[in-house]
Each structure stands twice: as C-alpha cells, then as structure tokens.
Length: 496
Image (cartoon, rainbow, N blue to C red; front, side, top):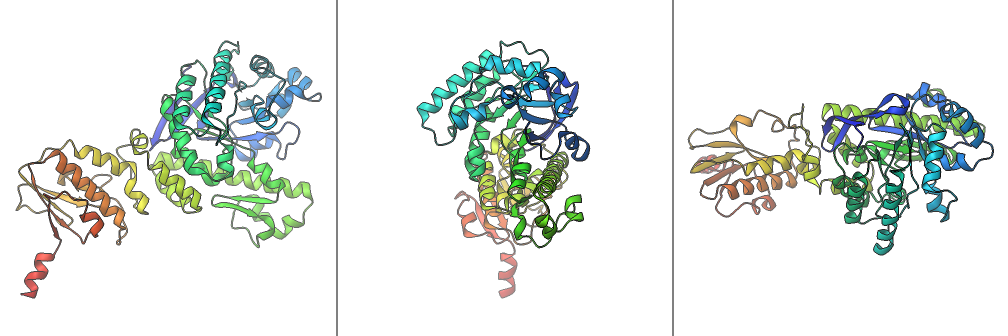
C-alpha cells in the first residue's frame, strides 16, 4: 500500500484527510467532490470549475476519450490537463459504466490503464465488473471473482506515479462487500471506490447503502481512501461522510440542469415550480426563477449547473468544517429530517455504533440532543461500554438531582448516558445540551446504562432517584435496583 492518505481528524467515522497525488505533485483535502466532466459536453468548462468553485480534483471518462476520433489524438498529443484546461489532479474512469449499461466494451484492463497513463491521468481505474443491487448471490460472487482478477492484473501494469483504484463490488451482500474490500486492500492499489451503488442512490435506498458502505469499510484499513461512486446529490453528502467516505463524484449538477432541476441540500426542485430563490449564490442573486425559465436553453442549463455546483461545494465545505468542530452528527440530524429515506439511512448508520465509536474523539465542544436518534450516538454507546470497567462500593445512589453525601457513593443520572461518576459530570459529553422535554428513548438509553453498571457490580445495592421516567425505561432496569421518583418523598411529607 502506498503511503498516500493521511487522516487529520475524525468525528464518528467521518474524517478529514489528505490524499497525496504524486503525479500531480499536490494534495487533495478530503472529503472532496469530483465533478464529472463529459469530454464531449462541458456544461461548465473545467477551467472555471477550478477558478470559480475551488474544485481540487475532477473525474472524466477515459473510455470515451479512447474511442473518440476527435479527442483521442489530442489527448495523447497534448495530455489530459491541456485538453480539459484543468491544472489540478484528474481521475479517469475506465468504461465500467458503459459495461454495466451495454453489456460489453472493446477494451481490456491493461489497454485502458496504459491509455490513462499515456494521456496523463493522475488516478486511473481498471475495468471492473459492476454488479448492481438485487443480483442473485451466485452471479454477484462470480462477478466479484472476475473483478478481483482484474484488480490483480492491474497491479502488474506499469503506471509510474499514476495512482490506480481498486473498485469494490459485491452487489447488496454485506459479507461479499467486506470480503471484496479485504481482497482489494491486499493489493498495492491506492484508492477504493465502492461501485454499482447508483441504483441505490437513484431509488433513495439509503438503508441498503449504509449496509454496503459499512461492510466495505470493515474490509479496508484506516489508511484506505474511499470513493463513493456516483454520489452526486448534496442532500446525502453528510450521510456518506459520516459513513467514512472520502471522495464523491457528481454528474448530477449538469444532468439535473438539463432537466430544469434545481439542487438544494434538502432535495430537488423543478425550476418551473419556484417563485423565488432562497439561495444566495451569484446565480440566484442575479436571477429570478422566471428569468431563468425564460432564458435560452444553453444559458438556462449553464446557470442551473453553476447553482448546483455552488450548493454542492458549499455542502462539502460545511461537512469538512463540521468534522473539524465535532458537529457532524448535528449536521446529519438536520439533513436526515429533510427526507424520510435519509432518516432511514441515518437510523441504519446508528445500528453500527462500534464502527463510529471506534474513531470518534473522546472530547468535543458540545453534544446537542436533537432527536430520539441522539440517544444512539457513538458518545452514548461508548460511555455505556466503559461503565463495565467501574468498580463501586457496597451501595450507590444514582440521582437525576443534586448528588448526596448521605450515601457511600453518589453519581449523577443523566439521560441518555445513564450513570455518570460525580468527577466526570462536568466533562464532555455529560454537559449535553438537551431539551426540557426528553423523549422516552433518552430515558431508555439511560436505563440501559444502569443495567450495564449493575451487570459489572452485581453485589452493589443501587438506588436511583429518577425524574419521572416513562414506564418503558423503568422496565429496562434490573430487578435488584431500588427505584424512586425524584421528589416523591417530599410530596408524601407535604400530604401528611
């Protein structure tokens, strides 16, 4: 494995990284968005992607260049960067998309990799075998075997300083994806795209996408940069980043523009349905929806594509900053509320707490409890796991109120975390910002924490004073726990 990727910071499994691209003699900060450039149809010229939008890296299709009478010669003669007028790193696809669409292509892995190297690509791609979701297992296994054979062949092709990707296939089978990732990681290839997920993205099957990505990540090392092929809509970037994806490629900005569709971080709008723009990008400041609708087709498509790019890159920058600040989960909570399928995806991500907790920082500025999903965040799960390490005395009071010195030992009881030693109660994440009215999942999570502490201290007499916990949470408490509602004694005394 080449030492080309370094992680600079984590939030959950989301990470800020640096991808070194030797042939371009530069570094790409991740998460990064790669706009897709069609060599024949450039809605926004690549040079403007760099100067106007701050594009670090882009992707184009070497198979189209290879088969083009008009472009093959210039690409070989002047090089890809000159042809596209883009000075940053350029990644090239191999024709696997065309293979998936049409069933066959007239180029081999060796031929296309050599061609990519000859035209000056900085990151090249072998011809893998894309296996879409809903394929039967035997076919998925067979096609994954063929993909791995091609990756091992690609590993023998002389490519100089050009990085080479190792696409991970496996259809919708998590075990097969994990196995494929592990086999790809054992090669000396460099970047690991997760392939054939476009149908899941197009059909908003985010729960299944989460299963595919988490399985792939289990098979890869922490130094493996992960590219989510075809992830082009800004509404799902935060989810993909929280899963640990580092690179995204997008043709959506141009394809949607041709259909008169306007991207937002909460979904897609048809231009004809808008009365005014809520966006402050230059396109939206200088135009109204009616003006864009009335513009000539080429101008309308160009301006819509520019807006779509502004929105997409703004979201990527927002995600990077959220990871740096430790607020990626808060951002993901917001994005998940924009579409039911995204909420399903977020909830499915929380079904893999170990993967997020493994790299989640132990300290951040704040923890915001925003929804019932917050009760299942990595910070909560990690605290519950650590409760098994504590040894306490013969009796312990857990109180949602002020700690008492009348017991041998007294801890705070903080939903959703559960028991918190007094010495830690002013530390992150137990200083969480919470609404006054918590949902039952917060109390149930706290009860699971109590149960974990009881399991590791079965001889301790534990009493809890709770703040009116719901019955569903009280039912999760072990039978030996003495349970009393906070203030109940005082209320009884007043009645007497």
